[in-house]
Amino acid sequence: MTQTLSLSKVVKLESGWYRGDFHAHTTFSDGYYDPPDLMEVARTEGLDFFTVTDHNTIDAFSHFGSPGDILIIPGLEVTMDEGHYNVFGIEGYSDWMEHICTDQNKIELQGKYETVPKVMRQAAAEGLLNSINHPLLIPWAWLDNNADLRHLHCLEICNDPTFIDNAANPQAVDMWTRWLNAGYRITAIGGTDYHYPQFKPGYSAPQRLSFPTTYVYAKELSGAAILAGLRQHRAYVSMGPQATFQAQVNGTTYDIGADLGKLEGNIEFRATVSHALDPVYVRLVKNGSVFEETTVENGQGNLQSSDQAVPSQPAWYRLDVIGQNGEILVVTNPIFVGPRRQPTLYKYGDFVNL
Ligand SMILES: [Zn+2]
Ligand SMILES: [Zn+2]
Image (cartoon, rainbow, N blue to C red; front, side):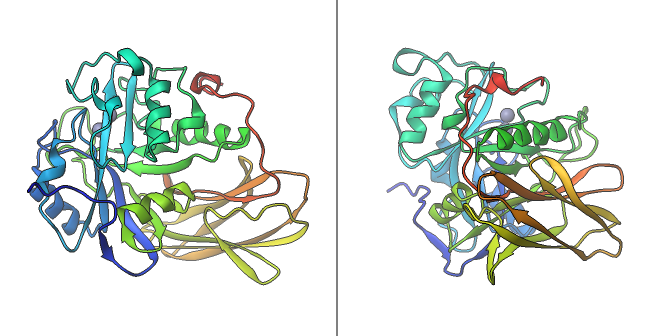
């Protein structure tokens, strides 16, 4: 019997923040490592999990054996001229994959699923998660302006930072910020887009799996729990430093991704940063603007702040950690406060080039 990847397999029973990478290729598309060797790289980097996301194929799924110590989440990078997006949580084969899993470079959507919004809607209806990859990275930027953000669960705000065009990641953070302000609660994640360990022309350094790392809070280490954590926005993206970000209201503590709902009165925010190699700027961001900032000098420090919640006003707060050259080192998903803002614009193209 062919062993394949299961979302229900539990690797660790404990709840906690797990270290993962949401974008990696194997020899079944254009990756350097076969599945067992890719697993070994992930172990060496100290990852708890990664998603396998080959271009237009899921053939690697049955080649990971039955590892007891590391979680592999089944995914697929839908790869088209119009852009690339990952689908997470694939168990089995669905009819929307029929025209996608045919060619790793050139696919034509056809028939019942002739457009990206139709494919995304179907995958979402099947309980899978859609995540647009490297959205502003030329020449693989996302070009389908008709993609419907209501069927999108995640955005890869940090893709392989060794690629020479390092403007695409901060631009992706800016676009995600506009989505948050419009009322979307799409989870920001990172993916190394790991292909090979060698230095390549056009890159500033060899790629390294786990740069960036996405930390996800999950009730256990299983595919189902990690993907549930993503749905609840319980995640942050890191290029090295670790962070905590919490809100306190009336003695109750809320963590990254929490929705505090409508409330009135004082909210206390507390954040910590550790494992920073150099001095870093730590910013509490409210609705896209810097609300409070501080500098952390010696590898670790904290930020405290407070705000007054107004029951009629939607607000979101996140933590950013910025390096000395302006590079983004940490971005958390938000803590949401107040009534939920309902988006009025639905298409990807409504938010680009603003
Ligand atoms: Zn891609
Ligand atoms: Zn990729």
